[in-house]
Length: 478
Ligand code: GBH
Image (cartoon, rainbow, N blue to C red; front, side, top):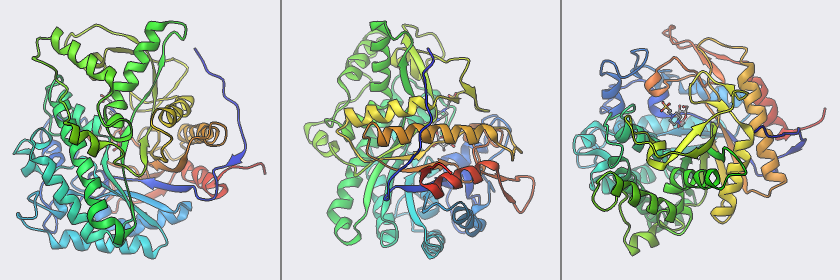
């Protein structure tokens, strides 16, 4: 089952963008400072038993106060782009403009953005990296129809307040994750367990909100601001367990369609859910006595709006799986069971500190090729890619290998397969609050000491290794 890989030299091209990524709740802290409203992650992390180490993001890496240091770290590694996210409740504590705009929140982000550009860096803003205002969750969150307009209005405020500086926008980070883990499995905020219904209802609203936000930018902002707007989707690569088995091949394809295609096909494909996913949803619904289908339907007008509603494809990639079919619906019902795949991994794959994370560099090359050929060769930015280890590791050899090997595969995808790869953002700039596992798993190329009130940052070995690749814009003989 193993795949061969060779080492190549070469560079990514003159216009390739290098960056590092973070997200508001994972780094900012200042959860109740300067008028910020509560988010679903504040609520969730403050609920006993939800976070493995009992921690929360109240202070996190304290980037609310230390963003200038973070910006210096970006300069130190020589990247040109900083992917960060806006905290919706810091801008709109009550979720909507009628509920009051938080001037101090806007001021904070303007100060931050000014510092980013004054330091010669390009800001890449994610509008939604999971920290929904709690007040909107109290009204149903992503399951409620109303969320669509609330999101578009929030986006309008961000375009209006920051659009002169921010030219690179990502509407959503990983909708499959926040809908499925938040509303299906319940291991992420808001912690709802309803695997057969809510994630797809929520996802439907996410796609509508995304498409309307894209239209909004086109109608009201693009002419003056000249930016680009896209979305970040994540997927594992699914490889047939037995490459000679048609059944396994069908399972792997179904996996790709239901995982990546769920959001990618409406936005980058024909505007609708993938045919295979619609069929699967109907048969699972029938089997489990769910009337009709748990997968909602778009109207023809919505399909038109979805189609082509992104200037680029943001991709987060971490790992891959071998897959075969699965007909098991026993509790707990997982995303894989709903899709109908059984996942397998190879014991030779290097294991991260996160149970789910196994290093499979060739999977990334196959994945971007798949996107290239299925969705008409979009511009692709890798908006996240990274590896976890235990707290306190500075000589992070495994992460160094992971980054080098994944960038090798991307270089092949770009130079040998002709994939339109435009940039790469490492996850993450600094150690941070890793959602339901708190501070137990670390993704930073800079270490953060969470025991230290000063939240001291220290470069790991991977910061140096990554910075060398950035400097060479790839891999050179020397
Ligand atoms: C990204 O998600 C996020 O965008 C980022 O915020 C995060 O810090 C980073 O990755 C590292 O995790 O608990 O076994 O059910 C990556 C995709 C999907 C990976 C959910 C972890 C949970 C697996 N994630 N998955 S499990």
